[in-house]
Image (tube, rainbow, N blue to C red; front, top):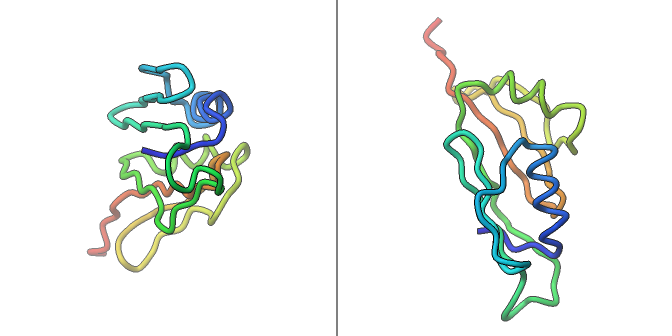
Length: 114
């Protein structure tokens, strides 16, 4: 679950830029978005630390079988953290930054047996 400052802005970003659909929402407190077999939940900021900007020292990693197609879909309308590349550890991946500053990585296993 990602804490966000603006539920409306974040839902719009995930729908417009990333192609998610709003599956459920409870006012400005909580939302669930879905695309394919992926579900991302959002929460308003509350409790300890609610006066600090949202942050996470990790990233969200989404495995896919269509990383090149997703790259083509997102490369011109997203803030790119790093462009698509095939890495020695057997993944083809790229990363974007969402409207809250969270890094979202998209990766696909590649066959390195050649």
